[in-house]
Amino acid sequence: MDLLLTNIGLLATPRGTTAQKGSAQGKLSLIPNATVGIKDGRIIYVGEQGSDTSATQITVTAAQTIDCGGRLVTPGLVDAHTHLVFGGWRQNELKQKLEGASYIDILKSGGGILNTVEHTRTASETELTEKGKAHLKEMLELGVTTCEAKSGYGLTTEDELKQLRVIQTLDKEQPVDIVPTFMGAHAIPKEFTDNRTGYIDLIISEMLPAVAKEQLAEFCDMFCETAVFTPEESYRILTEAKKYGLAPKMHADEIDPIGGAETAAQIKAISAEHLIQASDDGIQKLAKENVIAVLLPATSFYLDKPYARARDMIKASVAVAIATDFNPGSSPSLNIQLTMNIACLKYKMTPAEVLTAVTLNGAAAINRAKTHGSIEPGKKADIVIWDAPDLDFIFYRYGSNLTHTVIKNGVVN
Ligand code: IZC
Ligand code: ZN
Image (cartoon, rainbow, N blue to C red; front, top):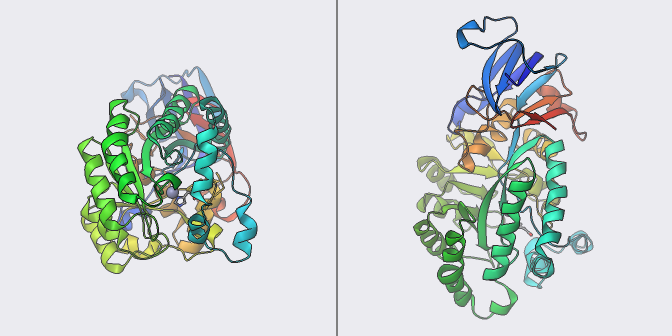
């Protein structure tokens, strides 16, 4: 055994290899006085202190033992929705926001996403990689061991590929696992203002084949929203994406209720994101098609918008994941712990439900639930030791980074 964690005060983890929904979302495995054994980056043993390990042929002479000092231990956190790689920032929008300009007003005036597109196009791959690395370092310190990352700030074939190559390089060069998503349909670029069909044709005829050929993405996401892409356009783009093996995701019903959730269900998306304005019918359809709701409470906070109806979704048996939505416009924070606090307080989700949302359900939303998102034999040894005695504590003592030690692939960071 490479690593043995002893004297765990409380081990809290969801269990399984699929998203947990309904009442199962709030049911954790809670083991007091636990021990975890790790070998070759995998978990090989989970048990109570002093329990018999001979049947599992585990030697207690571990190369390294960490005494967890009675602390809380959970799986490493999964941030299943980020716009990780971009040039520039958008602090200049703060004044406009305070004066009452909406997110869509700013985008329509040529700012917002289009401002970030300009800065991302002019940035070199090296610059974007260095910036991404700094973000990932902060994320890991906050307990994130796996994340998703989208393109969508290039909006030319070459610049979308550049962003996805940066994501690939980042995945190789630092410890956090990164799952790549192509999001060419993030906005209509300035060159296509008067020719939106031309841009959609470019996505379909040039970008999707190029992304698939270089195997640079596993998912295709898009922004289905008033003044961005319609549900019909979304359906068309995602249908084409499926042909290249890219599983659909959708930014749906974030700002206006335009039938995004219904479209995500119709296309059988792996996940639908935001869903602040999702209709009752939309929620029922997500449940029926097993679409995971990736909710982004820090965005509601930052845009001062309503909060998604997480309780109604859990009641309807929609699996809920929670992520930061880290991006330079509507969620300029990498702090998944703050996101968890907001989810608990504003969605009225229990600490157990939120933990499942940022571990196993997050992993399921990016097709990693077989290997990530819980502390069970066979899964990756991605683990957080918290400066906390129990789960409630991390939802109560908000605003500080409460991680004590973050373990990724069995390695202490
Ligand atoms: O840069 O504003 N909502 N896309 C959809 C974003 C936010 C990112 C941005
Ligand atoms: Zn987003």
